[in-house]
Length: 74
Image 1 (cartoon, one colour):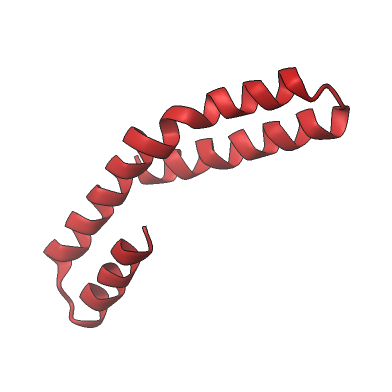
Image 2 (tube, rainbow, N blue to C red):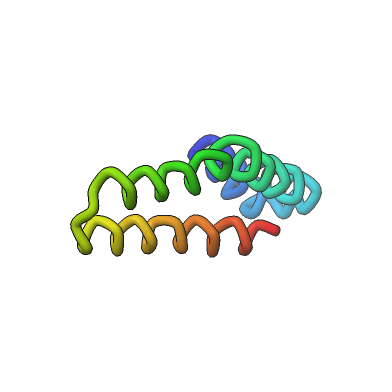
C-alpha cells in the first residue's frame, strides 16, 4: 500500500491521471481481496474470545473503520 501511495503521489505531481486511476484500482483490489477478507473473522474472534465489554467495543470500532475504508474505495 505504501508503494502504491508513493506512485499516486508521483502521478499527482506529474499530472498522470491514468496512472492515478490504475493505482487507486490496485489499492481497491488489494483491500477487497486481501485485508477485507479477514477483518470480519478477526472482529468475531475478538468478540468471542475476549468477552470484556471494552474489547468487544474496540473490535466493533475496528470493523467499522474497515467498512468505511472499503466503502470509500468502492
